[in-house]
Length: 390
Image 1 (cartoon, rainbow, N blue to C red):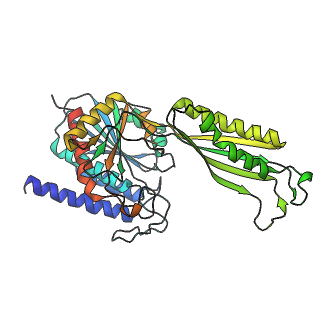
Image 2: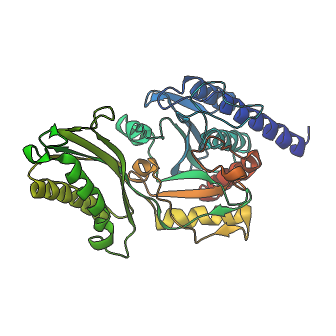
Image 3: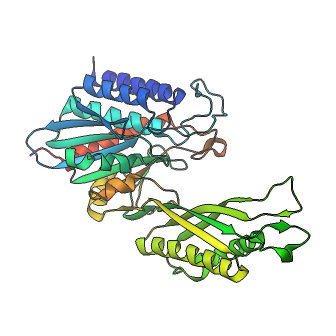
């Protein structure tokens, strides 16, 4: 068998596997089938496997030569709780679950790279292949860290990769600094005194207070945050009263939303200012307010030195089709918890055109299999360059 035939056969295997994973999506901390497949294919390639971190997490360990440097490569495995509406041969067979963010592709690309590195062994050092569960808001990265990921598998640097619709599949963006925003949630409850809708003077109306709060909310970004610092505050949930009781002013209004920032001090400002506005509004209307700010995911900020190494690898694979200027995303990714333990870099790999407008978290989204070879090549090149054999 020639080398090119072997490569083609491996790519065919990876493509079939990607489509199989797509058809059998599993939510965060439920990735039993996926993690079993990952572990089996790693072991088949002669890679040591550790299972059970963060319930369904898998870490492959490949040590070659006598190099002392250790790096981690991360792929997320979980799907989303949403239906797949587009018709395709490998459409999700699980109602209400789909791979709408490309984690099926991320898993397969890292698996392909691990198998190729184990076969060629053209480096000196240790690679930890980190297959993470529960990236989609369920805290998988944080749980892996708490379970001792970096104590068991120390890393001198850690890298993450995510697909990006709109970039070509042979195109990559590698940029120093902020890549994804912090992702935090907030809740406000206004407590008034309910009364007859025709007699508002006999109660304390929390709905009018909530309306004032909501109309003033954007003044935080517009008038408090430094205009050179990006930030987002959005109210995404509003619950009050009963649509079948339109003559009743309720006692309570529940409001919830999200807050995003790229800098720690701006994140702190958002927490403080949302609460200040809520309590100030309550005071103005003579009612009570309770406030909760839930810190979920820190921002992803690429380390300068790790970014330089990732950029060198990307240029070796993609040549002139590497972008060093690319706008950060206001989405979040809990890769931030890994990058908080070791210098990190998070890169964007093209997923081709957004077919029919299907971006991430869309019911028609699909990972582009043409990107598999590109992703495998990047991971393999990064390892071989960073852990170059003497």
